[in-house]
Length: 304
Image: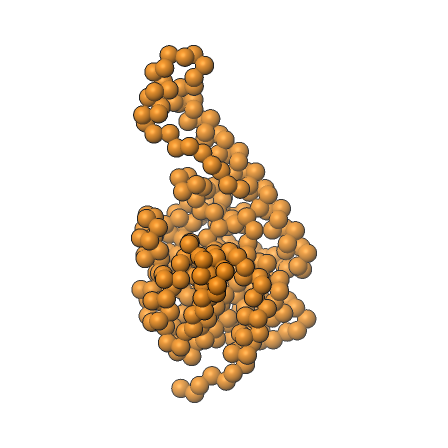
C-alpha cells in the first residue's frame, strides 16, 4: 500500500491556526488525525500482507516454523521437494517496508509480496526461507524495536541471530552445502552470512545492496550507522561461486553501486540485465539461474 500525503511545514500550520475560521482544525488535532490515519492504514496493509503470504505458503506446501536465533525468534519456511539432496538453498528477502513515504517508521516492516518466497516456489532443491528479526508478525516481540529494520537492519545482532537460527535448521537436516540467495537487502545479508559458514558453496544476489554506505550517500538517506557493510569486509573465499545480477533500469540499487564491490571479489560474476529494474522481472529468469547454480555446485572444488 502506498500512502501519499502532503508534508505540513511549520508555516502551513501557522497559517491554518491564525485564519480565524472555526471550521479549520488546529495543528494539534490535525496531527492527531494524521497519525490515526497512518495507524489505520498500516493495520490494513499488515492484514493484507499476511493474507497474501499465508495463501502463497499454503499453496506452495511450505512448512512454517518458529526458530530461536540469538536475541530474536525467526519465522522460517521450509521447502522439502521429493528430490532430496545434501544441498540447501537459503532464500533471504529484501528490506520490505521499513519506512512509510520516507517520513514515518513502519510499525511492521514485512514486505507486501515477498519476492524470494515466490522464487523459492520454483525451486526443486531443498530450501529454507530465513525470515529477518521482527518481520512476519514478530515486530511485537520484546526484543524488537524499529532500529532493527532501520539503521541497524544489518547489524551484528541481526546477522548473529540469523546465523544461529540457520545453524539450528541445518542441524535438523542432512546438509553438506549451502547456497545463499538474496534480493536487495537480502543480498547484503547473503554476503554477510556466507562468510560465517564453512559449508558455503555459492552466493547469488539479485539487485543486491552490496555497499550500504555508498547506497545511503547515493540516495541522501541517513547512514545505517549500526549496520555491517559487505563492501568493507574481507572478500569471500575464491572457492565460493558468486553470481551478482543487476537490472539495467534499477534506480533503487543502480548497477554502478554494485560493480566496484564485485570487482573486489575473487572469481565473482556480474550480469547486468537489460529491461530489468529493482523488482521486475526476476521470476522470468529464475529457472535458468537455478540450472546454472546446479551446474556450478556439481563442479568439484579446486584442491587447496
